[in-house]
Image (cartoon, rainbow over all chains, first blue to last red; front, side, top):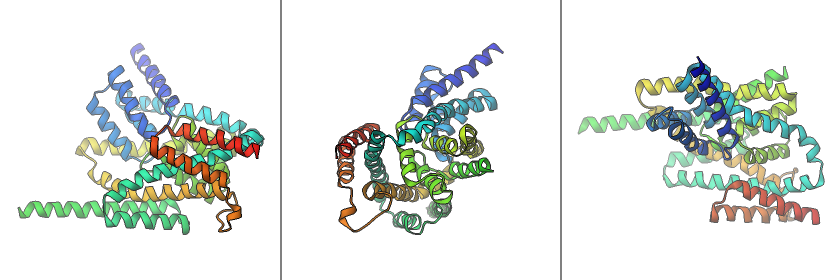
Length: 193
Length: 187
């Protein structure tokens, strides 16, 4: 019993700590989790961690949350999953709630207002950088369907203001159709050999 | 009632933000700015700035921010639960499939099909923030008088810095905030 309690405590403190000190979102959390749970605590091995990462990145929602659900469940069942979600969600919930509480008062301050105005250009630049990186990878594929999907999705959301949800659904179906056609083709090639 | 609405909005954000990182941003803008008018575009941009500079996933940060502004602490908690709920269900489902069939070929195929769309959606959300930064809340205009040249210069310098030296984005945002803020105040 004591041992179990110890695991729950450790699970909570580890996920809380990771979430509180991870800046930069999903791509950073996986290597940090690996260091904590594979190298330090030795709760799971490296292969298992790679599997968890693959599932976490394939599921919708925040990668950090997905990974901690899987890890918590793997280590301590459903209660473990619940505890690690709590550990992951609490730091941003606390920090942002405090910021949000002061936001209105802060926003009217001339200095804060000027700094936030300056930061708008910075955020726009950070997003532009992300788009250039991701978009560059898509262009490198030299795939006509991908290029078509990218352009139509942009027009649909920016100019036609179509609900993003529908765009995701349609493009997901296109992706599924593409992979099914590819598999069928691979199978046919395999048969003819 | 408002709590239910918050829950449902963030449930959809959690459900359809696929691809990690900034993939949630266009959905948050769609739900929070366009559909429900809980935040203005300026407030949304502040939110993205804050979310990028504080720890934690963008979607959870947004849920806490919007929830607590609309309905206090209960709002923040309900919106966060809404955001996490779809993950719990789908992650369990995918984990089951993964261990049963030792692979996620179809799911990963769908994801690779989604990638170009996700880039486009992030680009669209980014473009509206860019327009806000350069032309202000009235939106795009051909008239050169309405262009904020300070902001344009900051943007150009920031993009160049990010591409050339690949620093941590937090420093780029802080830098453009401090430098830009100082220029705006002096002017």
